[in-house]
Image 1 (tube, one colour):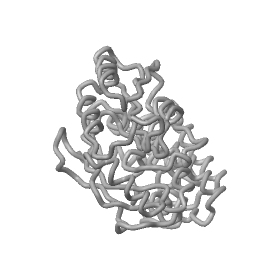
Image 2 (spheres, helix red, strand yellow):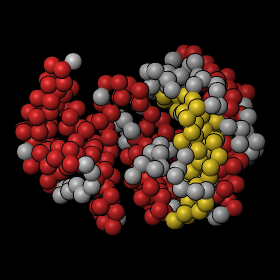
Image 3 (cartoon, one colour):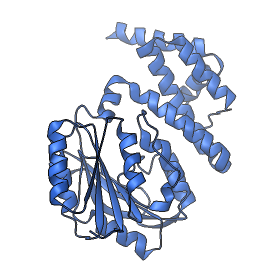
Length: 326
C-alpha cells in the first residue's frame, strides 16, 4: 500500500462478528489496487477484536484503530480524521461489496472530473447478489449539484453514505453527529452541496443484507425512527432555509410530513401531549407551511400546526375506533 492511497474506505465495527469476515473479504478482493481500509473497532467484543487484529496483521492495506464504544458516528469520524486517500468511501461492516466497488466508482469520477458519484445497491439476504435494486430515477450521467440535491430532498437519492464515492475535500469540517440515529442524513445534504459535478452510475456495487438487531431495524421496530427522521429533517430544513431558499417549497412539504409522523408517534407510543405541542411550536416558529398532499394530510397538518391538543385527541380517538372495529 502506498503512503498516499487513492481511496480510503472507512469501516466501523461493532456487534457484527458473524458478518465481519464476509465484509472484509469482499473489500480485499478489489480489482482496483490502490486503496486503504480503515477499520475502526468501536469497542467490539473479543471475537470481533480478534478478527480485526488478524486481518490487519496479514493485510498491509488495512489501517486498524480500536476505541471505546462511542457509536457509529464517532467511529466514522475517527476514520475521516486519519484517512490518507484523496477519495472517501464508506462500508458498514455487516454489508459487502462488489469486486469492482472501487474501480468503477473511481473511474466514473475521474473520467468526468466530478467530485462525487452515486451508484446502485441491492437490499439482499446473506451472500446472495439477488434482491431489491435501489437506484436513482435519474438516467446514468453527469449532473450539477442542484439537481442531485433536489432529488435527495424528495427521496429519489437514498439518504445513506455508503453507495457513494466522495472527493475528500467535501468532508472538510463536516462530522457525523455522535449519539444520534440516521446520522447519514444529518450530513449528506451538506456534502452534496459542496460538489459541483456528480455522476449517477447504474452499476450495482453495494450489497445490503437485512440484519435483525441493527440500529436501523431497532429504530423501525420501536417507532423511534419517526423521532430521528424529524430531528434530522429539522436540521436539514434550517440548513436549506439559510443556504438554498429556492428549495424551500420542496423541503417544507418534507418537513411537514416528518412532523406529522413524529407527532403521531408521540401520541400513540409516548402519550406525550407536551411534546406534540413542542413540535407544533417548532413548526410555527420556523414558518413551515405545507403546499402539497392529500386532503387528509393537509387536514392533519392544519390541526398539528394550529391546534396540537385537538390533533392529539383526534389521533387517540381514531386509534380507539380502529381497535373497536377489530
